[in-house]
Amino acid sequence: MSEVDRRAGRYLPPGLPRPVPHREGLDREFWEGTRRHELRVQHCADCRGWQFGPEWICHRCHSADLCWERVEPRGRVFSWERCWHPVHEALAGFGPYLVVLVELPAADGVRLVGNLLGDPLQEVVIGAEVEAVFEDQPDGETLTQWRRTRANESIGDVG
Image (cartoon, rainbow, N blue to C red; front, side, top):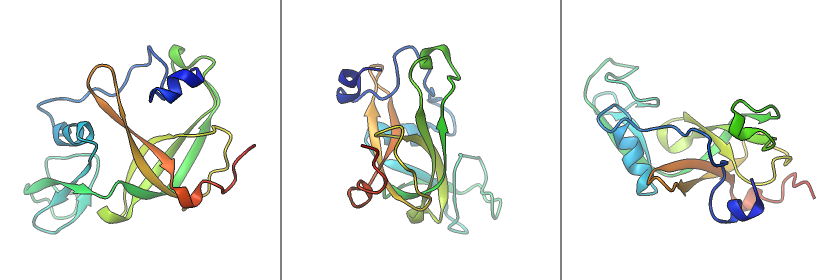
């Protein structure tokens, strides 16, 4: 992936299959939210519990009264992995890249996975604050990536 592609707002290389939303499925509202640059998480109207991935019933109380709510697109790094080996032919020569598991305080600690943008050799600190970056794709879909918040940018930069 060239620096030009990254500046154009494309983090993943061309040819890499992306997650495809199921327009009639459980994740439809999540994907509709990302296209509006919103982060949406499932929420139970009965017990007020949050959950992700999407399900037909609440993980806590088994209610079917679930809705999707917009949450602040900020969180903390719960775990991370620096990937050195390509898992798809389109990633050959692309590594390393960083994958983070982000905990969302606004959704009672629900966790989402995504790429951490920036230097792939940067130091990653558990608990570091990150914010969502919505990456619009040529096919009209939008992916959620993560970047460190401005307050954390100078921590561990490789230079």
